[in-house]
Length: 381
Image 1 (tube, rainbow, N blue to C red):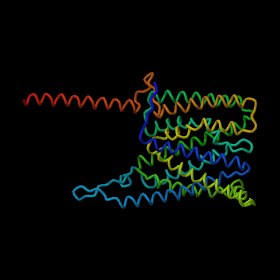
Image 2: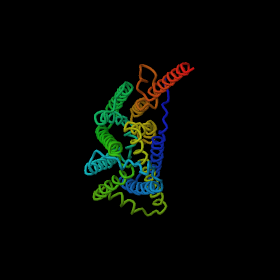
Image 3: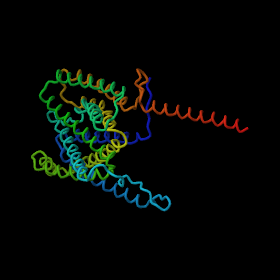
Image 4: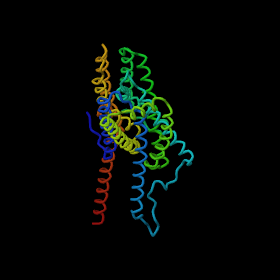
């Protein structure tokens, strides 16, 4: 009934998931040890600085290796291998505008997530996990209209199930949450963040597939634009308060641990963002959405366990949300053909079915060629 749709290039989304989890653990430890320390804006800025450094190094290393490789020749003519030398359909001006838009979506989505809060606790990862599967629905719809991606039966089936589960989670959230105003505000920030992430993926996918841009070059440009935008935020009171909090810490050991965890968070976030871009390029924005949502049940459990004040209906809402999250993650796997369901014709047009059909056609062609060659040999005799 169910088969695992293994692919050789699943290394990228697997590493993406791994660094998401490690980064979340670092943030969780920092929050448990120092719950009074809020470093959202500093974290974002440090991540952009790290991405700029890492992307510059990786691009330099890539160019160095390309120079050392002997270019293939045919009849004394050097052959073109680099994608950067291919004709791009868009002008440089349009490409720059698209990268600026992707940078804007990146930093706006990050800030929207960090506006999700409840009291004194920063819970944006846990709250976002309840509704993150909406990103695969948005990505699928936008890719259908922009890239003309086909939506087959197993896609439609899983998207309907995910949508129903989202409606259930939102409905019970409205009914059971005690502070409905905070719930609606957090839900608005979460949806805004999801839209920004989807548009970020779509723009980057377009730049990679149609304009043949190098991932590291896009990272460098995006990091520069994001740093320019993020530095302007430090004129505001909340970002400046984060710097003041760090500077006024008198305990040297505490300051050392905070800076250390900040550096670890920055490192794992930067590496995670590298593999996010490779996941988008090698697969689709829907695969990126799956890679992030696959950890949502764990984040929901962490959010429930770390909530100090649990209301009367919090346990009921937690159980409903967890069950719906597991269903949404499973259907996201089916959508991306990580799992292939062999029932109700849901296996049709999946990569496993296409590979099987191609293998059967190849075997039939070989058989026909064998029979044809056998008849020729008889004629010759």
